[in-house]
Image 1 (spheres, rainbow, N blue to C red):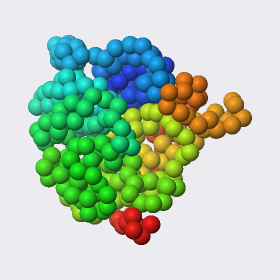
Image 2: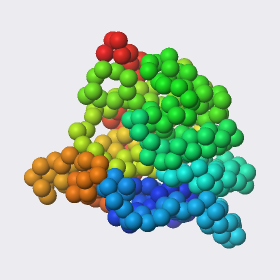
Image 3: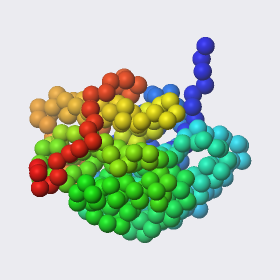
Image 4: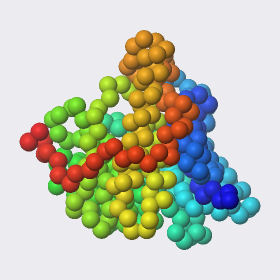
Length: 317
């Protein structure tokens, strides 16, 4: 017997060359047995890290028009994934789409990846910050996956220690009613050989879980987009009420394999592992994720990352 695939809409960027946004999410979700509708928020020749690109962003009006077309033919969804959007106009439109789907489809799962920047640097318009806060204020997002910098922008304060972290998680869980928070890259220790992925569920946010991740000495784009595309599937398939840590560990395990294959194929081609550098098109091309070559990994069940509830503070590291 062949069972129908689950249906998901993914609202994020598209590039003709390379793997970020919907170029990652579409294929990875299809490999995980999802029927995917892609609503592209930009249409670029390549991602902006190359230093040059051609194309244009989709306006908020265009996003809503595309969604209206989907509703005219009564498309139904089981889940929503939202990612990179350049400006507040597009973010507000995305919010209207997802809030409408929440009204139409009780139980639909929404993973919001608030892609805004990293390591203290914004790479979208600053007006998206209050736009995302307004969307969160409707208390309809089920899962959010910011990095540390993005989490700080949304809660309005720096996260410098575990007390700050718990305060931030409280904002997400109690003020914004988000059931699951996964901070994809998190570090406040002096040890630069690793960082953490932090997961938290509303019912137990005072004891967040930490996954220790070794730093990889290179720069890859699309990693967060890959993580979100993996995680929305893994959490969707968890039995109701189950903790999300197994899903996070599974997603991290698959990501580690994808990054390892990407590096190894680069070495096989060039004889050395290329250091990806922002603005350098040649190294950016070599560091594009090998999404197609890793297709066999996306449904694997391995969980190689163990979580812990305590980590060293900055003063102890």
